Structures are given as C-alpha cells and as structure tokens.
Length: 459
Image: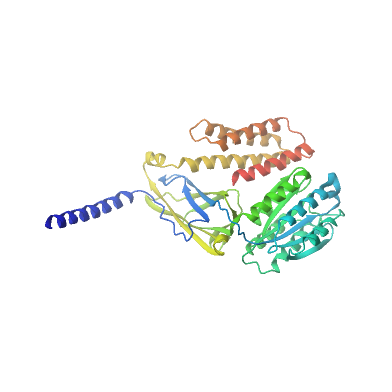
C-alpha cells in the first residue's frame, strides 16, 4: 500500500513539474488564447497573423487573416425571407430584350417562394412605383401578373427605387427573417440622388437595420463603381451581368444563397492595442464606431468561406510581448432559433532582436494571401488608370502585380488560386498592351470584368 502511495505522489510531482516547465517554455512564445466561442457548429471563425515576432526598431506591418466558414448543412427548415425586387424600367431596358429577361427572372424567383415568405416589387424610371406592396405570398399569380405588366419608359431614378425598396422592409417586424433588397439597373443614376457617397450612406444605414442590398449591373452602360459601393456598404452581393440571357441564372444564384443562409447580420469588431495602427482592410468597407473598427459582413451561407485580411502597423521600440488587437465576431444563428452568438480573439506579438526568430516564425499562408490580395488591388488600380486614359500606369500596375504572383508561383507557396490569378494577369497584360478605347463596348467590358474579379479576389 505504501508503494502505491509513493508512486501516486511521484506521478503528481512529475505532472506538476511538467506543467510548470511547459508553461515556462510556452510563455516564451506569443500565443493566441483559446477562443471564447458560444457556437461550435453553424459558423466557425479563425484568426492567423503573418508575424508573431517582429524585429526591434523595424517598420513592422503585421497581416491578420480572419477566416469565416459557414458549415455545410442540409436542413429542410429554412429561415423565411423578406425580399424586395427593385427593377429598372428606364427606356434603355427595352434594348435586346433586357426587361423581358428581367421579368422572366423575377417570375422564377416568385415561383420558388413559400407561404411564409414575403415579397415586394418596386419599379423605377423617372418615377418610382410600388407595384406590389410587401406581403405574404399567398397568391403567386397576382405577383406574377404585376411583373408581366412592366414596360420600359423614361430615365433612371435609382435612388428613389432603392429607398422605396428599403422602406418596404423598414415597415416590417424583421426578426427571424432574411431581409434583402435586390436592385437591378442597366444605366446611370440620372434622376434623384446621384452622388455615390450619399447613396452609399443610404445602403450603410439599411445594413445597420439588418436590411442587406444586392446589386445587379446589366450590360455595359451602368455605373459599376456605384453598384459595387451599394453592395459593399449594404453588406450584400454585386454581380456584373454582361448579357440579359444570364439574368435568370444570376437571380437564382442569389436566391439560392439567401435560402442557404445559416448566419445573418454578421459583424466583426477590432479594438486596436495602444500604438497599433490600422493600415488596410482589404475588400471590405469599414467604419469607426465607439472607438472600434466595425466591418459589416452581412449574411453567411452554408458552405461559404470568407477571408477578411487586415494590415496593422505595430510599435517596435521596446522588447517584449505586446498586445496587437482584440477582435470579436457577432452574428445571429439561423439554425439555433436566432441565437445571438459572439466569438472573441486576442492577438499578440513579440518584439525581438533576433532576425532568425522573426523569419522562422512567419506564417507563409497569411503572407501568401497578402501577396495575392496586393496583386488584386494592383489589378483594380490598373483598371481605373485605363478607365481615365492612363494606359502607361495601367500597364505598369499589371506588370507589378504579375511580377509578385510569378515570384510566388515559383515558390512552394503557390496554389491553384494563385496559378489561376497569374493566368488572368497575363491575359490582362495582353489586353492592356493593345487596349481598345475605354469608352468602347470592348473597353467597358474590360473595366467591369476586371473590377469585379479584383473585388472577388480580395475577399
């Protein structure tokens, strides 16, 4: 009996010794504390930083990649939808059957809705018409008849149509619903509010009220900067639709995502440590609210993966471990009775004098993503240069982007996505070297296509 007790005491002693030694060893490295998550299944959230160590006295930029994943789910029960279709019926919608394709797409959406869903239909030209006040879809034929009655006329009061769509959703009790305005336009906003900044604020305020805005630009003559901004600030999706024949497919893609929503109204907050500066949030708009950086991410869909990359600049004047950022992620869990979920991460870094330690601890995955995103940003900048007639800087930006990606693809860090990105950049360089005028149809297609691709690559 005495032997057994001695062995037990020995095991306890060794366990405690190992724990102390282990803690001393681990304490020498910057760590990310275990997440304080209240949700384990529906949406996962992770954070990785490029440099847990930085060199004393250096200009230390640290990349942090936040990855959000909606879990793959197969559920017969989905959240009900409040959906308002806002359809441009200006004169240009008569071209190549645009309005007819838009009507067909709208009717396909109506056919897929259930009795628990609500739908509203707004049409706009110079005037704005509420053709079908938002209501439960008990009579699909009445909604379909309203769509069939649309015909093209006059100018493009996009702001009036957008506000009318948002107002329809504001009038409802929206808890437990997916709330979406889908805005379609083929032209320039030339009546009502036309300023991008003012319209972006309208979209941002809607997103704050759990109303998200998806924009669909049809053809080559709409303002893609406006439509992209509305989607960004409205925390929705943006689509460039070159041909009206694609409309039904795009409508169904959007509607399919809405039906596959597992988390809604997702927001990320960043509280920066003292002295840390935010240099860039790639691919997402952000605001400063109550001393925190706020990034509205909108709805999360089943099987969806998003990457939110940020660049921070950290102080390096004193040796030792430092706090970098306290980040939180909040959303409403559709699959768990609209439970409010909050996850939190505290990230740190350590200032050292050892160059080898800095190099050995780099996260290659995050650095690779940073290179890819920077190349995508260069591609976007090249497109804007081309748009203004500055072909020299456009070509230089593409060459710079291509150089980064080629170097990356010659290293072990290459991936299928970066190889694809290299191919797209080579194609873009060929187009820019013999570029058609920016105001030609071919030029407009290049501008819209590459702005959309650059946006997606940053996400």
